[in-house]
Image 1 (cartoon, rainbow, N blue to C red):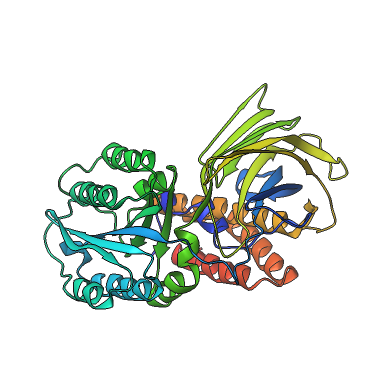
Image 2: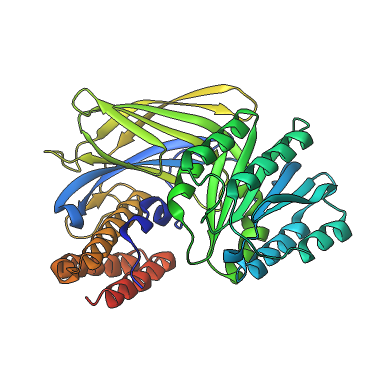
Amino acid sequence: MVPAPEDISVEGLLNEHDMPIVGEPCVDVVCVNLAAGTGRVDAQDQSSIFLQVGYDTAINGETWERPATEFTVVIDVSGSMSELLKEIKLALRVMESELTAEDTIAIVAYGDSAQLVLPPTRGDQRDEIDDAISNLSSGGSTNMEAGLQRGYETARQMATGRNARVLLFTDEQPNTGSTSAGTFKFIIGEGANDNIGLTMFGIGDAFGSGLAYEIGELRGGNLKYLAAEYEIEHVFTEAFGYLVTPVAYDLNLQLSSDAALEAAYNVQSSSASGGGTDIEVHVATLFLSEGHGASVLQLAAGGRSPSDVEVAYGELSFETTGGDIVSIELAGDMGTAAGGYGEDAFGQVGTRNAALLVNEALTAIEICEAFHHGSAGSVAGLARVTEARLRAEAEALDDDALRRDVDFFAKLLTNAGI
């Protein structure tokens, strides 16, 4: 099939790749660096400056241990989930193997209404947890409001001041009770105010991503889509601890630049004043991850050349999980050392990669838009230009993750009849 244009996410694409910025070794829980370069944006027929905000940590993934956590698992067991319940049970059983005696877990299941199917239980009580998972069955409508309300009620009753998190498994298709995004955001926001975070696990081809993105932008919130059984195994063993462990809140980046802000990706909000050159960016929560995450700002190239050294400078502040406020002064430099496709030029490979992914996503959105308006042929030229860029860069950077993107993009073109 060809996705709807709103189902293609620049942020989703960025988060599937590792985009480190090379700099001074990180010695803190959170380190931030800036890097910049110029790259062509095929869908906009222009070149832009790409300013990468790169995140790193001194935490050693080989020795780090997830902190003890109070988990409240909220599961959509409505009729629409009947074909997906097997995958959810697999995820829960893999997750169960990661729990320790220091953890607590409760399970809430919802369809027409919500029931507590596993009261708060110590993480090493395998028999009780196994029975609750085995007894899950699907049926009825989808009252997500009731599920979230019961889930947060349970989480508050469990709260002891430790790390507390609701895990929501759903195809995100509520059809009874309140179905308003505002209602869900209110419930989750009130939980965040009580220091209860939310990780949403989206599942199924019919997953409704729009509300999920909004939820992931709330303090303490994030989203992971589970595409297949092999990914479930990986997520709930290798990446689970990272997904449920925030390391910083309320990142605020204030920059001054002589280049105007055009777009911002992998941020919760952005604004610009002073002709677009006083830039403010906000990220609600920073989590640990397997790779080096990044936010990307697209700035007007104007008359800038890669030889211009400094593109932006400013300050970043954030709140640690312990409640301390940290401020860091930053400067973003241009460069040509990492090269680029055609006339593109980047100082770092991570930024070259980030700009390519933004370019890929924006063209993919144009293709999907045109296809669903019956005019896919009108973007055939654009599609081929971006495909050539993507193939060349995947080989030039010798990047297997980009090669997977090449396969995705080629399939999109085939399905769109281009």
